[in-house]
Length: 282
Image 1 (tube, helix red, strand yellow):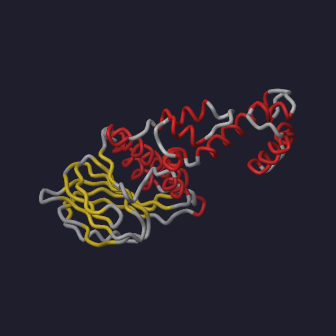
Image 2 (cartoon, helix red, strand yellow):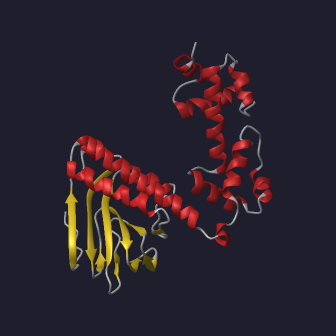
């Protein structure tokens, strides 16, 4: 695969790798760095890409996000089979890039760690992100299974760094409700019956907004998030206490022990007693 940049480059360094079958979760398939003077125009890539603009400024234009200004240090995400254009102003810019694919990217999208609508992240901690890109490139040069796994790990950390810095960069006026406080309240009250309509009203938002924002934060609806916390606590009690199943069910806020056992089996693919037999520490 060739990146058709259609660019005038002072320096360029590019590596391409076919994904290993064992790296289906996340695989880095290309990496490079270059100084460019002209723009990519109306291009589509077959895979995901992340571009780090180290120095310089210019633009990114996508179907989902429209035309936006880019000023380094910043990075942006490109999505497969989506037309995009980008490039520097007349002074050029220095960039690094990586191509990647794999089933784990679905989780990045579901958790909104990367977004087509908001693909650009201005970077406060530029040095750390730059080192991760350098690590990806060095690992692809080595081209061993261990190095390829290391490259995937570094790419994963780039995703997390970008998401963290995007969150930090949000203006206070645009943050809306205190989601950290809402998540903590859901966590602290997970073992109690909770009226979600009343809970949303406590925080000055509608139930629909509560569901949408909580799902964006944790990847689960408010009730789904609380159920996960209940089942996690139940597993802890099963593994560390001699409490009867009905007692554990009550402690996690489920009065009916049979209903608790059915829920537990649906989620864990084993009964509470089977889980205890597998994980109980004597």
